[in-house]
View 1 (cartoon, helix red, strand yellow):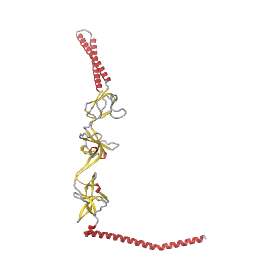
View 2 (spheres, rainbow, N blue to C red):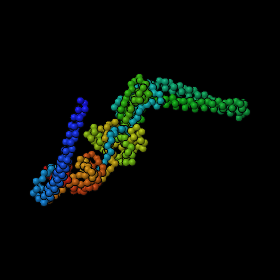
View 3 (tube, one colour):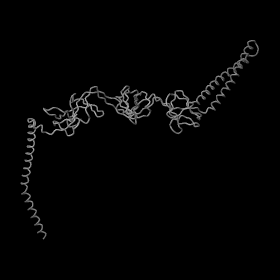
View 4 (cartoon, rainbow, N blue to C red):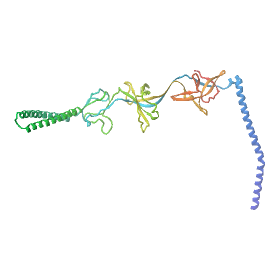
Length: 403
């Protein structure tokens, strides 16, 4: 039974193989025929396109029927072009005084003569500290000095008399030398006490705290009875801060890649957003040489003119000029496109009685805002296509929008 089944299977397989072998020549023939038709189709398409192009060049009536695209244009005119480094900075004060006690230790506040927001002059009294001990020390120094002075005068007189008696042969030389020594010791003591008196007088003056600069009391964070040390205990915040708002500067951190381009005297525009974008034309007055290890930037500042509306720590947009061209050709950055040949723009050109788009390869320069400088490939008077460039190809007829 198994032998019979195997024989049937072998017979059927051989029949299938024979049928497949019979179909092979027919399949190969059809594939060859298909490939020939495809080649003919490609040649026909090429010939049709060639004839259409030739007809379009010879028959102007056909050209007029070709679909045009609506575009907007701009005529190139040489104009000044400037590139800026855009940074965010702030306004800072040139002169800021963190008021501190001159004796280094301070004292308890007895009287306050300034409040936050007051305008103060240089040398104006701000605080008086408790001066009871300072006055006692001064009084003691004055009394000691007066007593020493009286003894000194007495010993000088005794020394003078001893000298007179010794010149007359009365007394001994030891008496003269003793009187002289006593007078000299008292004079040295008197000079030392004079210095102590000066120190006591200075210590009493330290109990009065004055402003070292003219400006506005930006911070007054102290009350009568509190200890004045210069800083709020436990913090780095000043108890009294005086800011000279008449001498201000714009400051910013510049990336180190611009180190060779930003120098003293470099032009800077400072824009103040909170003052309706008020713009100041300034120059760099300080350009740091130290690169911050964390931010990889360096410090610059530009001195600002006085204005009552300018405030320290106010946000300022700092624009540092690093490139300028007097007569540059620029185009909107959106008009510059790329292909295998490089960057190009499309311009509008006259072709007999119609306008067409024409591709022009360009070399570009600096980019700032929405304009990019064109170094070569265009010339003054060229009409570039600014809108409708999407899908527009070289040689396509165009129609201009109403200007």
